[in-house]
Image (cartoon, rainbow, N blue to C red; front, side):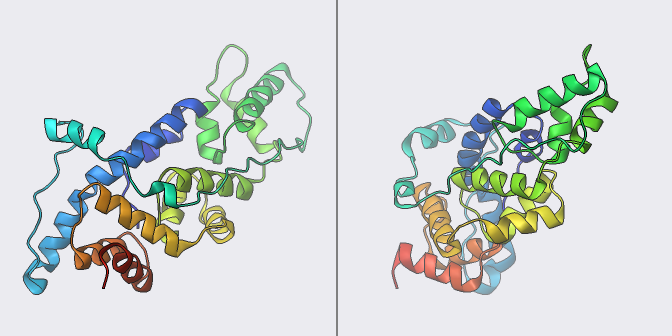
Amino acid sequence: MSFFTTDSMNLAKMSADNRKKQIRKRTIRRSLLVGANIVALSVALGSASGVVSPSPIEPLDTPTSNTSTSYVRHTLQHEHLFEKPEVELPAVPTPTMQPSTKGQRAAYNQMVGYIAHSPYSRDSLLNMLKPNDQFSEADAVWAIDHSGIDWNAEALAYAQQLIGSAASSQSGLQKELAYLGFTDEQATYAVENIKIDWNEQALRCAWSYYDYDIIKDKKDMERQLIFDGFTRKQAEAAATEVFGK
């Protein structure tokens, strides 16, 4: 399970450039806001484990001076250790049917401009094709339905883009793709075909928590990584790498 913000829903409605900027911002925001998850876990497990609940982190909507300081001071010191997947955009497809009206052609041409530069789910692409004086909503739907787009390939490229910006477990990535508009089948295809070492993703995630001073205890780290969707074996190995035996 990954930690979602409202950014995940909004990403589907953004232009390619703005979406990439927002993904970079979300990398920091996810790490800062994840303190709320840790608080919830500590409350649930604290009495049994003796772990003291950490102080909650202020929401980004009401930033404090500490939050802005954290932005500057923490730079994810260990990110350079990890190889990130290259985003492989699918080739522009051949339409399954040629446009028969000016509106259909205008919608198709605009759609091609989007998918040539960034991956999209069907829903997010339809959100981008806003009706205007050149084409209607029906034209936009026609363009997408006859686009010949390989949605599995789009999901895979989107997964590569997300992993490039922030570490994730396999299950967390699959849920995020589904949340962004891909079908369960498309999301499953993406996480099963992305060339990623999930053990390394667990370690990358652990270092990000550690570098941001969010988690400074080995057992807390293991619990958080499991909560994020990593297996117990992956979580224990990553926590041991960060804190030692």
